[in-house]
Length: 123
Image (cartoon, rainbow, N blue to C red; front, side, top):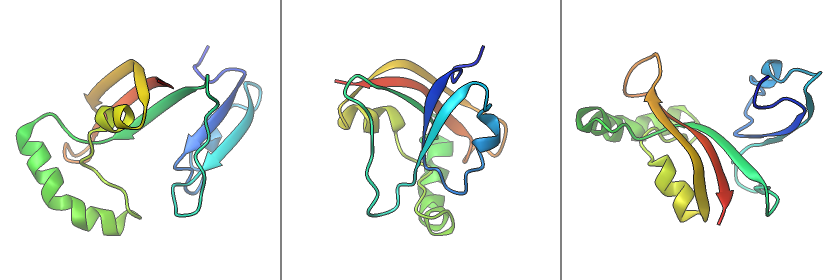
């Protein structure tokens, strides 16, 4: 059983829909896709759960220093994406309470590969 079984999926940062093949038609009833470009609205029911997976600020001082150095160029190349944001702090500032908080480097260049994933609810 996977986390999205028999669920409605809200994909934030939908982009070119590369994650759609992972949404099994027998288990996912509906997919909502949002792209954070200007003019789009963010949607979550008051009692809804936010499931997140995002790359961001590495805890290693040396890696984070490189993230800060490379971010301006990366932001231009990657459509405004930031590689050095503190995801839990941003969620907290946005009114969310973390329920499940996971963090780790995933395979890849360390400057790009620190990930946060988990769930949060509106305070």
